[in-house]
Structure formats: structure tokens, C-alpha cells
Length: 112
Image 1 (tube, rainbow, N blue to C red):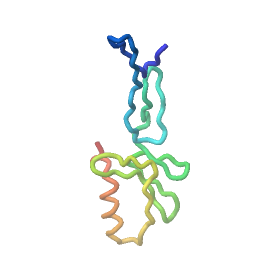
Image 2 (cartoon, rainbow, N blue to C red):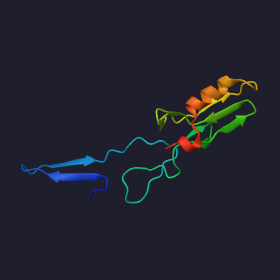
Image 3 (cartoon, rainbow, N blue to C red):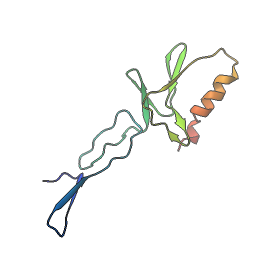
Image 4 (cartoon, helix red, strand yellow):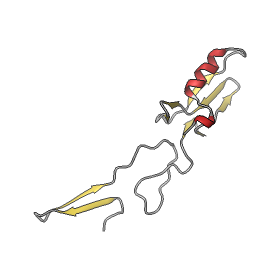
């Protein structure tokens, strides 16, 4: 019996050729498998992780008093890297951190 992920065809020479569905790359670290679907899905949307903490895309997580982590967003899509991008906090008043964060971490209303 075939799974829903397999497709087979009979050729004129009476040989059977089967293929298994290709699944797209996922942008999450906790995919789920749904009944009657071949490929896993990101039920909770794109995310990444740091340590054992799953971080939803678009959310910054303070790991400790000096470090903030987030999922990278580059070239109009969530980076396929599953590890979060983490940065040490700089002293108050430094524009470098804001500049870097604006490149790697878009405003929520800019996320597709």
C-alpha cells in the first residue's frame, strides 16, 4: 500500500516507477506532522532557538542582563539558520546597536 507521499505510475514496458514527495525547507525548529499530509508544517510560524528556548520570529528574548537574541531576517525572508542571532547589549546611547538591529530585525509591521 502506498503512503499519501508516494506517487507511482506504470510505464508501457510494464515497469512501475515511484517517487516520494519533496518537502520544502522549513523556517521553524518545531515542525509538526499532520495526518494525511506528506510534509511537516510550521504550525506556530517561523522561529529559531537559543539553548532550549524557542523564539518566535519577530520577538526579541533577553537571555540575560547583557544578551538579547532574535531570529534573523534577511533579504525579505526568515534566515534558514535555526540558531538565534544573539548580541551583547551596548552602553545606552550607542547608535550602532540600533543600526545593526534594524538590518537584522525588522519592525513587526514590515514582516510579510
